[in-house]
Length: 129
Image (tube, rainbow, N blue to C red; front, top):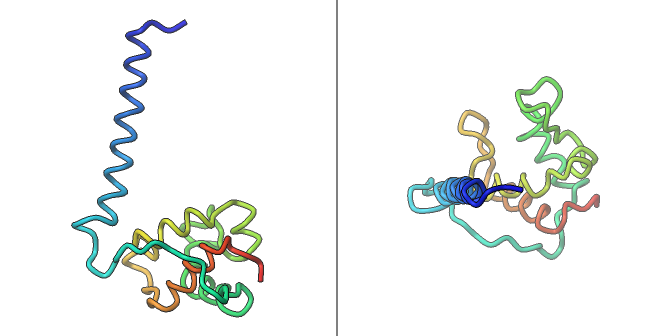
């Protein structure tokens, strides 16, 4: 059984981690964030973007160079719909896009219409359509 002092220190450590994580999140989207990165609450568009017709091509052009075989982020592969769903990457992908953290500054920029398509598809649950 832990002493009250140990429990209090563990609680404080958890609180400090939470504050750091929250601060990082605010830094990405708050006042100081890139001016071209407005926060918008994502909605599932109607009609839903199609992985086969649109999203797969966007991911292949803008993501697979890093998130594919031989890429610097190949441990997080996005080369196929199966990769994304098997590893539950849809949520992290959406958060990175909304915070304007992906693609990184040294990669080709994602045009706003393609970013909207990708975020819309992720918001719809990343269907295999």
